[in-house]
Length: 118
Image (cartoon, rainbow, N blue to C red):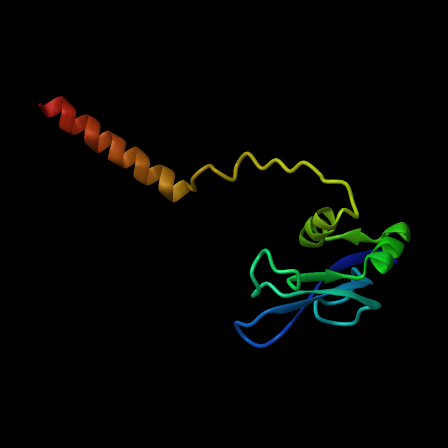
């Protein structure tokens, strides 16, 4: 059974609240889970202590059993010092999309044409 440590969404519309859970990876996001390991409230300030609360002992147990944390949960665990910090590299993050590149190209061509007329 492939285990994941992931977020299960709760709360009402536009008021998200997440539970950090250990679940089978085949189960739905908000469906059946094996154990609740903590909470995450994204509406609180980033420096608030109540924003993320984890039961570290149980998280370490599930990690030792082979559970894989999702990206967001891995960031929480890195901040808590449970797992080693990993280097993330997304070189395409700062590259503009196709439409923005087309607009920039058209603007440059228009500026070059205006400069050639003068």
